[in-house]
Amino acid sequence: MKNLLKKEFLLSFHPTAAIFVAMAAMILIPDYPYYVAFFYGGLAVFFTCINGRENNDVFFSAMLPIRKSEIVRARYLYVLFVELAQIVIAIPFTIIRTGYDMPNTVGMDANMAMFGIALIILGLFNLVFFAIYYKNVKKPGVAAIVASVVYFVVMSIAEVLVHIIPFLRDVIDTPDPLFWGYKLIFLGIGLVLYAVLTLISFFNSVKNFAKQDI
Image 1: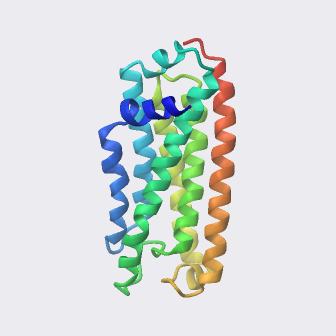
Image 2 (image 1 turned 60 degrees about the vertical axis):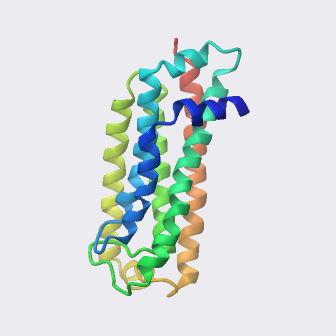
């Protein structure tokens, strides 16, 4: 597994992934739907998969004396690193954004609850993307299109609800550290659902990938 992870970061890693992770800085943009910033984490995953297709990464990995499940596990660990790295990088930008003392009139304020909701949306992206990708690793574009649609639909619903539900509008959509207890609950729920959705996605991917004739 150590060598497979090494391969993910040294050979499969696409240069644009680093740029997309750095998009966490978009949190500093005034009046902006901040969930868009985290979409780039999913986009980094897509570029890694399409890079692997062009370089026959999956084919050559499948020729190694390892189980197919190990190939999937290494990719998922890489994905977790990329997505969670973007979350961590976004934290200092969120702190700076909070210092502006300017509410986000477009959508959710940059706060702890926002990270929880972003994690849920990323979990759904992983669930949809890899459910399609590991059925046919030669067509990552199809998986990306469907997963992107799901991401932006759920993101839009989250942004709309925060304007029309009083509790979300008056308590959750506020700058930190106001109502930090409620927001911490949202963050915790987001972490749990992200882990559950990604874990479900992993087991489905292992099952689907095992059926593929590479």
